[in-house]
Image (cartoon, rainbow, N blue to C red; front, side, top):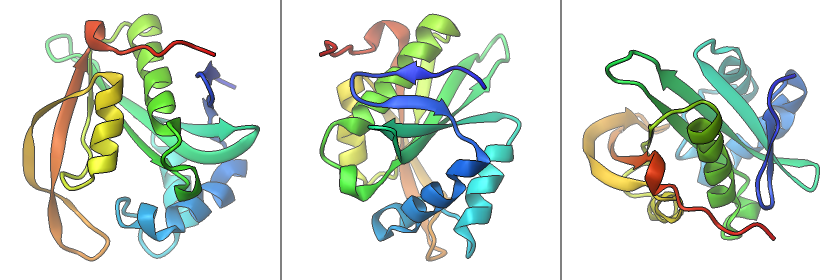
Length: 175
C-alpha cells in the first residue's frame, strides 16, 4: 500500500484509482483548473498522474475525505540529488492551513526518512497564496522561471522557483 503520513490535521496516503473521481472534481474547480493543466478529460489527467513511474502521488485526506493531492519526484543523480513537489487542494479548504500541513508533512518525510537535503517547489509567480503557504514551511524564493508553464488558456506564464534546505524546515507543534 505504501507509506501513510500523518500531519497535524491531514493524512497523506498513496492515491489510488478509487480517488480519481474526487481528485478530478477538485481539479475541475476554477481556482484549481487555472493552475493545473489537464486537458478536456480531468479523470484521464488524474489517472495519468497516478501512472507516472517517476512521481509518487498522495491523496490528502481531512476527516477521512479526499481534499486534494500532493505529489513528489526525485532527481537522484549524486551531484544534484533533490526532491520536488506539487500540490492542489479543494478550494473549500483554502485558508485553513491544510496546504502548509500537507507540504510540511511530505517535506518532513523526504528529509527525515528519505534523506533529501534539498527540496523544490515551483508555484505560478502570481499565486501569492501558494507562495505564502510554502514560505510558512521554510521554502525561500530562488528566482523567476520566465514563461515556464503553459496555462489552460494556452498562454505561457512565469513560475517562482523556491527551495528548502533540510535544516530550514519549519515545524509547527502538533496539537
